[in-house]
Length: 217
Ligand SMILES: C[S@@+](CC[C@H](N)C(=O)[O-])C[C@H]1O[C@@H](n2cnc3c(N)ncnc32)[C@H](O)[C@@H]1O
Image (cartoon, rainbow, N blue to C red; front, top):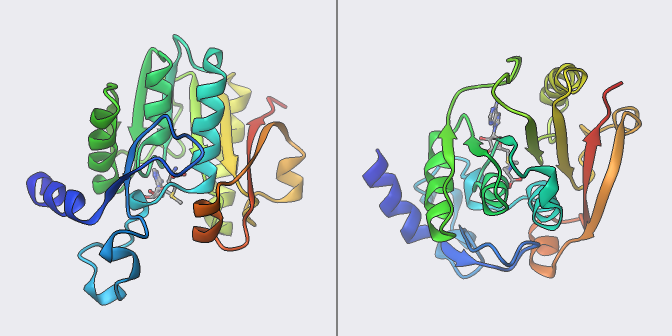
């Protein structure tokens, strides 16, 4: 699986710095890739979320690169890592551990390749951490995972429990419906970024993206 996926991944993605963290080069499905405009039935992949750098993930990675103290010497878990940018950013600014986690095994392979491109070391994990105590981690990154209402409910309940246990929960989000007003009232806005042109075109309707910290109470 690894060899076959790696070769397809390299064929269908190209290195990109056209995002909020240009200091990181990430292999993504960009407008220059034939896959970008190919009919779904011609794609060798099902739901290649790892081929895109979602606005929420861009925000958390940007925040970490600008505020290294958030993760320095701390153990960081990037849940739903996709292309791996959150874990890569954490490793780049010297987190004690940076783990890229996704239930899609292709996402962690993509993350590993992207980490190598940036000459940083990350660990990968395909377990579903939702509901777990995350006892081996201090900081949890959630990049753009509030796209679905039911999943958002599950996620927020879990994250609230972790925040009460003193974990730092950083949520990157461009305004998805799952991050409701009542949820936002339980978080502190840390940063707001204007999305670059390419990301605005890719994510119709979103022009900005934000990083929130979930409050302990
Ligand atoms: C919208 S993408 C965001 C990717 C990345 N965080 C970013 O912002 O670029 C959501 C990701 O969450 C992953 N995912 C969904 N459920 C998950 C779970 N229970 N645990 C870990 N990852 C999950 C998906 O496979 C997908 O890669």
